Length: 198
Image 1 (cartoon, rainbow, N blue to C red):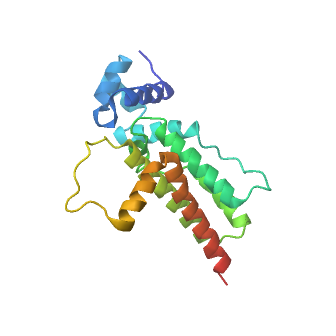
Image 2: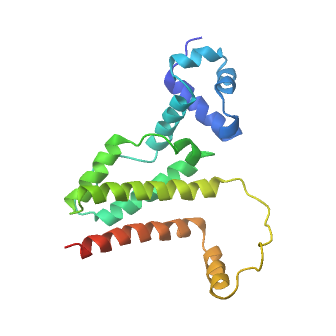
C-alpha cells in the first residue's frame, strides 16, 4: 500500500495523543498505518526526522509568519507569538517534548527579526529575545505537560513568611495568567534594556 508523508505525519500526531511520546515508535506507527516498518523510511530517515515533521505540522496550525500590521507594537507582536506558541505546544500530548530539539522555523524567525529590527532593536538583541521567549515557553509547557505527581510533604519545614504568602498568591492564578506574567517580564525587560541603551 502506497502512503504519503502527510498521511504518516497526521497519523503520528493522532497516535501521539493516544499513547504519548515514550510509546510512539516507528513500529507502532507502521502497525497503525497497516504497512511494514521499512516503508516509513522512504519518508522519514529516522525517528528524529519524523519528530521534526510532526513539529512542523503542529506549529503550522498556530504559528503564522506574515508581517503584522505596521501600527502593531513589537511588544504586542512578541506577546501574541508567545501565546500562540504555547497554544500550539499544548494542543498535543507531549507537544513540548516533540518540539524540543527541533530546528526553528526560518520564515517565522525572519519575520520576527524584521519586526524587531524595524522597531529599533539591534539584530543580536532581537535574536536573543526570540531564543529566550522560545526557551521560556517550551520549558513552561514541559512543566504543564509533565505527569502529575501526588502531593509530597516538604523536605524540612514548609514555606513560611513571604515564601508562604507568595506561593499562596501564585497558586490562586490560573496557568495562563502565570505564563503570561513571565512572558511580560521578558518582553518588558527587553524594552527597558533598549530604552536604557546609549
